[in-house]
Length: 639
Image (cartoon, rainbow, N blue to C red; front, side, top):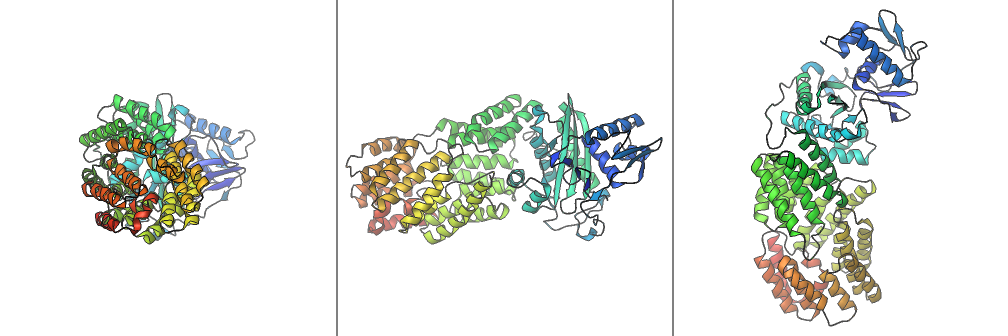
């Protein structure tokens, strides 16, 4: 029964999930008690001698029978069993124990018969497998003691094990961000997560902290058969957590016959400070939420990590990412928080200096540099990240963000192949098609991405995208379909929750686009109301002030001109687009086209001006001969 899970009485002993359930709720048992229970269940009905149990649970250790008796007593207590009148575990005097309850084997033990299809065997009988069979996902480690102060270790240990497995060079290790996202949107069971990730193998485990000591138990399992392929058990002082975590994968490697796990670790990406490690782990959990309310706390956590270890490159990368996320909440303002972006870039550069082999540092720096319009340097950083870790979807996404034209399309396609549910990749591709004025292709890509976006949001996905319905609405409006444009823009507004990163921004864009669509349909009063709602979110948004003035039939564009005074200094490309919209509204399409041509001719390489073909207030230029060179230049930049 070595590969099976079991049902007995009101309990389910889930070997794959390495837990015991009662009425679908986990029973609080230590890893050692789980091992004891599974050993007894594997031999249900048979006498299991004390010697056999000691050898199985404490191999090679000098442990007395008293320890075994104590473990059996604790297991009985957890199961509500009574030694005097046992329902589950019966003591056989002076000999051992027998599991006496009826046991239902929940999975057939056909593992041995399926040897040719299985990814490996204990004791090193490992074969070459397909890419799918070598895919492995690391689940969060269970906090057995329920110690809230140690909760950060659930993800922290999993991250370290993931990194160490990747260093072995044998497995295709699934990115932890994807594992957590899938666990969140499914029922979280190993079977569901592994199936969604197309991962044959998984690491499940738990930890128990007792005062200043910690015990970690982990297992590599075949998610299809439930067979345990390798075990690891480590125990030691909490201040030795780093060495203990490394021993987990070292034990896996030994049992799987993969040789010794790599011992050399980068000084920059790791830390010898437990305080720094904890602060980094807690900061990363906040950052991954993409909840703008968590960003100040994430920054504080990463700052604490860097204060504890100034050479901790991963912590500096996390700090740069958190500062950037905080900056992004201001990017739609006329004067964004440039100091936040500058600090983020400094920290990103420092992380690269400390560890030039840290792909995450290069990829993060690329993301930051794009926002500073240093696109050439950003592209170099992103390419370096992909060269270091070519199968990491995040790095490919950032390469797509830094590049333009065909290179962006290739990077986005590769991102989607690795992470099909990442809707932002569709947005990246659609931007290129819009700039090329291939609106039909943009629409196709956006409909695919919007479907992904809706699924993500509907099931609480970890990285729910925004903006796809907004852009689809503008594309449909540019093609003259006002009704569908309104439907897409309304959908975007409903999805754009203000606490989510980019939520307030896209809520405003949706209301602005809606106002423009209503104006096109000559529903003036409704258009005015939509523009006013957009201004409630961003009071100085220049295009919305322009739309409001047009809707009211006003000839005074003072609010637009005031906004332009700031935009000219802070956002020269956006300033040129707004200036062109204003000139168009004033009836001077030639000057508008000249303004756009000048801006594109001097703009850095990249996506500058990509929205021009779908900007509602540039629609009048479509029939102007002076506009043709602008569109040609824009398309050439996106080649």
